[in-house]
Length: 378
Image (tube, rainbow, N blue to C red; front, side):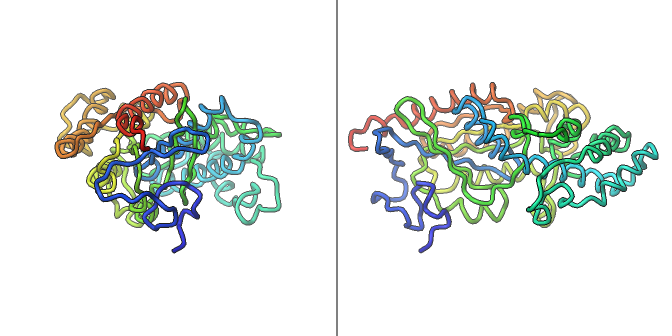
């Protein structure tokens, strides 16, 4: 049988492509050794799409390497410009859909001109394969006019209605800088990226005598169905949920129009109940604290979750409510399984905070699997 992972991730798969020790359902995960003698700890990143899993993966690479090299940063140039193009296109579509009039003739001209731009004009997509990817300075000027217009800002306040990317403000505010040549993405440019995960992404990082093997398997519905039931031998699950998605919905095509936070709660419950993860540590990352803190000032949580009775505009109260919803599922899970559960509030784009949180996470995982690490037969 052909392995959908192409046998490169090193995880134990049910497809049988990688020989695994004989085990029975419910057996605790084992701890392997690398050829250098280090223990291998398997970590699986799970969660719905756009909750920050890939950003966490990029952060781990930055933390481990002490920063991204110029060559590595340069490799993300096309991705950054593709994200800028997406933000511009979706913003114009949102303003049109909302029937908000542009505030100035200059903005009308900018919107009309940019709506006629193709990705190939920026050296992107199949049309631009033979061209250098760049944001033309005259287009950057138009983006600045567009973003400064009252229509764009009004639409941005209603971003949840149109599912505008969280990075819209970041990228469009930086259009002038992004158009300067030669353009080299910054680490922040890279961390703000939204790149859908279409296949398993694996990253190994070292800590003392441990090799932590982290795998991101994608959050889109098709990816979840394809990957989630393939894995055994997982020592820990890191489940990401975006705090800021309480007022957003998926399209009918993507997730049947479901509220995004409700979907994360549903997936979290399914993850806890999956028999293959019975003995895995569970760590919950309540991500996008920074986005929540801004959004909660203008978007009332009670409108979308009527049982929330906390004060309006209170990020702390909103966070506590959402955390308690997840913890309720975890308590039910913990009653029948003697495994620890941990949760952390995170901002995946903040390297300093992510470094601090993950230091605690690694210790939690090691202590929760101490019996396996101390077993001389592993």
